[in-house]
Image (cartoon, rainbow, N blue to C red; front, side, top):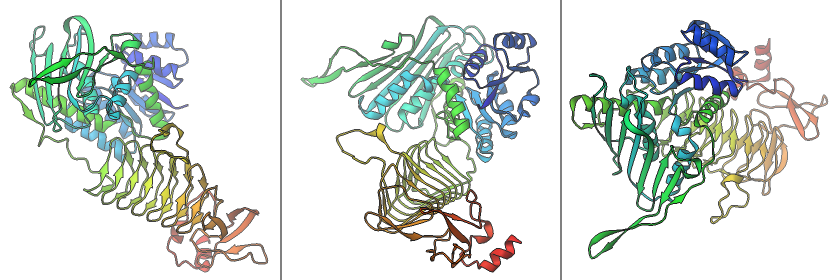
Length: 553
């Protein structure tokens, strides 16, 4: 089980401690207060407690660092953890300065570390449902979004209400709009402390025409947590203080025109069923999943940086009392270890490895994961949640659909066809029935070949151009025809193997590597470890057997 350490177990940190302990992932709690640590250990037996952060980040068993400290300490502690190769979860905000946030994102990317920000409400099942309603088009075109986060307390002295309350709402609004605002305007008032705003209202204007505002206060007579989405078909309200069966309400009100005047036509509210769950539990579980699978978090460092950019502009607007344009104040550039052509689209979040090249008009959808040193050709579409290994070459006009797993060193020829549903119908939604297709290491799929979903293509198998494969394929099999049949065996170098010699070996004419049948339908390479990639010195296609033997010596 993946183990994490929670740094800071105060007002909010204690909730993280509880959740990670219940998930079986908590190893250590670090806090500067010995009394707090003593209470924690009494409540959660079996965990380690310490006041020494250096001791925590040097513990090799701890894979993830969870930081729940005052905001001014986020950068220092997160940077040190990333420097030691740890995956990091940081409570909001990611940092207090944009350049600090950019440094954290850059360090996480270069170190292949997970960096996640605690924008809790993005993991609330009610907001996830609201987002689904928005994406599906049920609400229509979004026109206006407003959010109220109001209560009497908790009053802070290290940050104002904008930085304390608004990050959650800004994160949700950016997710619903799927774009950054072009103008930010904020106003606030200080009543309890000269330097800290107790009440703020932030207005956001988006390039698409959507407008929104965020109203936050810790000087309010009652608690209110409400997000309202006004769209042209329906209006939706996410009210977190309501019971679970009423957290999402739809209002199918319509506006009609009578004698040139707009007339509202009110309709009865509709309550949307929502799965009852604890958002913090889902958030903690997501961080552990990202550590284990290496997928990009929903609220990764880049998302945290976008929220931070809006917060910074709103703070500046508060101070100088004017509207600010976000244009020209972009997040500092981060040097990417991969290349994406300007005409290609890469949806966030996704992960692209070092040395990979994404060429003209390609589209990488969110949550796709692409390894190192891959070539993604022109007009290639890689769907959500697709996993692609290292050194994969995908030629032009290929779509890799959800449910496909492509291992290392696979070659996908031009216009080859992959599928994920055997009986597709335009009128029938079968998203939940996607079948898994696995292309194992070193396989080659020829131009215009079709791979029916739900099958496995074995290691180093070779599918000839135009073939239609409808069943599992053995390692090293050479397949051709419609439907495809095995017409022989093929070497790792892509050369058809001759019949066995007197010793029972099939010797590759190009490399001299020997192959033998372990079973009538299973071929193995005698000279190389089946679990290892092709040795570096054999990756040039003119190596002789003599040179191979010399290298082995």
